[in-house]
Image (tube, rainbow over all chains, first blue to last red; front, top):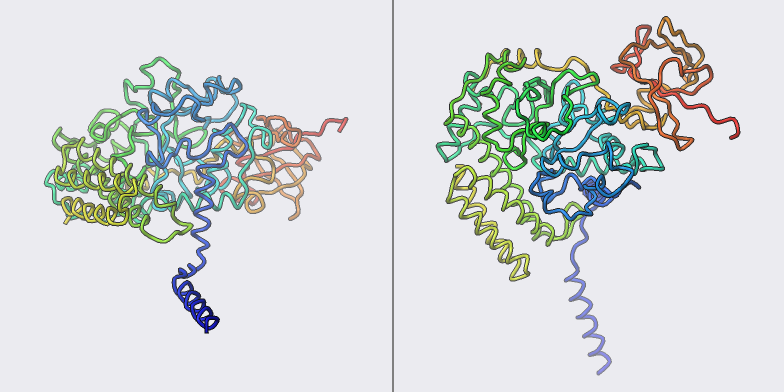
Length: 438
Length: 131
């Protein structure tokens, strides 16, 4: 009797735990490739000087760098290798321009004279690449659209980056100063990068609630006023059927560029090709408001200043400006277009925050990092969204909701009723969104 | 989207779109022969130099598919691949493409034929005599 009770109890326990076993998720090869790419992107040094892709493209800062973020890095961060590796202290970076203006050195016109032939550029973010690389003329990567060696593809970009930025010495010898990524690693890095940010273009116009941003959208789309949509279709990086095109907008002719005010050598940047043709690649504008400073040379700090550039002499005297018949915008109109860019950036941030918060509640998947990491990133992006709106004096009600999202996310991170807090944060996020768009 | 004439858009892109199909990032210099991502094994030729015409600015090599003569111009990049000797790669010139040397040729716009021009040529450095 006792034995049969034990057997029955055992069977009951076995049935209970069998029922409680979570279902085995289906295979997800793409997710696994993305996970591998993520691991490589943030951790693999390719046998070089200690830098990773994430050194210059940190997830915490929208996959780009700006002086404020750099200022909070520890002095031994691999970004600063030119300051503590003797073999790199000359002709590898310019530490002053890096720290003050987030500029890095690129030898885009060759490596024959490292002390005089180079460009100083900002670091482009790696968001939304699925919509910003392709063009009928071939893939366009980097500020001048010619960022990658080999076939010029996003997949090949990492090879050039390792050679330029990861090397232990200026000799740049494979298997001595670095190792080249393998084919499998290139596949994984590409998959990860393509998974970042928006996966499809917007379809303008959006039904925005704020009158300032709405007017900005009208000006943006007006081919007789802002004319922005001609080169940034749907506020993206593409120009109609031409895809991601290059333009000579005269940015290099801007006077008083901050980096040049220092007296440091900043050679003229002639853009695409070697010899260059002075064109640069059009970036997407959806991420713009939270990824300044702007243009390839980080010459303008604010989104309002970036819009105002198109009202200035450098643009209007450029080939692009002359062809368009010039752009004439008054102060209020500049602010209105900037407000539109701030608002669409916030909507994209909200979309990403939602993904991160929802992801933190889902079962583990190779596509996603652990819940705590997702919540940390959600917190960062929420701070971003608050800053972008508040700096433009826009949508204070939405800002209020976003602040609640932030507070709830902090509570969730502490582990205080995490699921409940995240669900509340998601509701607040929808309220924020509802204040911005119909 | 507010209507923008397709002509306006096409006019903009025709006038401003770059005409060069590709612009090689010059980190290519440090990539050993046969390792160019997306190019080696697909769009380049790896072979042995059989003839060099410096005044005529042409180079001939044999490879697995036969023989090819390619033109070079002022924009053709030449690089000496010294990676096997664990030395840094260097800029070089047509004159360094000696008979019998292993080379890799990337054709401009990936176009072959009698008028083909090399976008870049990598030439393997000679091995030191004591190796």
